[in-house]
Image (cartoon, rainbow, N blue to C red; front, side, top):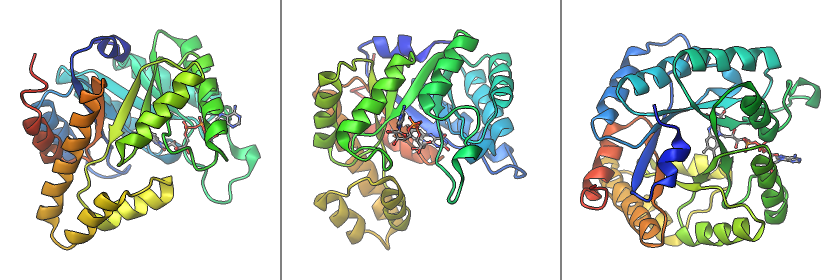
Length: 289
Ligand code: FAD
């Protein structure tokens, strides 16, 4: 199965998407069916998130395997917060046994009230990246924050900290969602000025739920531009209309990104095959071979 860095080296337009596993103890079958449905629209790869503190580890690995069994390269997320080196080593072994070659290495969010001493064996995502590279022939991605990570303190510091990921051998970066493309273009300028030139995959979130998007943006510090806020407010109580508008807005962002030289875009699908399906339909001529 392909390494994602090889897909990203290609100039062909490539649309990937994200899935999240069900909570531990609930049924996996529904998620496997979602994978099968999304696979039909042929994303270039699918990423599978990792529950906070490793709470979904078994399911994440099983879903990543299902993605690859559908002929689509999988990108398995892996967080290190509160994890021992032994635990990470075991998960890497499990992923490797499932034929997974691509890992998005993350720290994870710090649970409220957690002491420094409880961080685990790896303090930063860059420490985890270095370890994964040491452990095997994995292609490793990392997270990037066009509006700055909430803990980084400043945009300058954020770029300095992103550089640690590059120094640790990260192959590519995937961004946090953003709703105004100029934020990404300014960010690219700051990355390139700092000598960071690994591929950057913009992350796009098609809005489908007004309350959910406002809560996510408050947590991540993502700004809502006026035209986006107006759309969310206008259709807040009409879910089908908001979904249609959200797919159209995301499609507009993607076309603007492609027009300005980005060939690869990652879609936060929130496990909804109809969302990525709608976007792929809108882009049918653009993604053609
Ligand atoms: P880090 O790179 O460790 O950064 C964390 C903070 O520390 C930042 O403020 C950074 O600027 C700072 N920092 C980094 N290195 C240093 C250093 N050497 N010295 C000082 N400060 C430093 N979370 C999940 O739980 N599961 C997922 O599957 C998941 N997937 C995600 C996918 C994407 C594309 C993105 C953007 C985020 C995802 N997250 C996920 C959320 C992520 O775990 C959080 O944003 C987390 O708070 C930071 O993770 P990181 O990997 O960027 O950490």
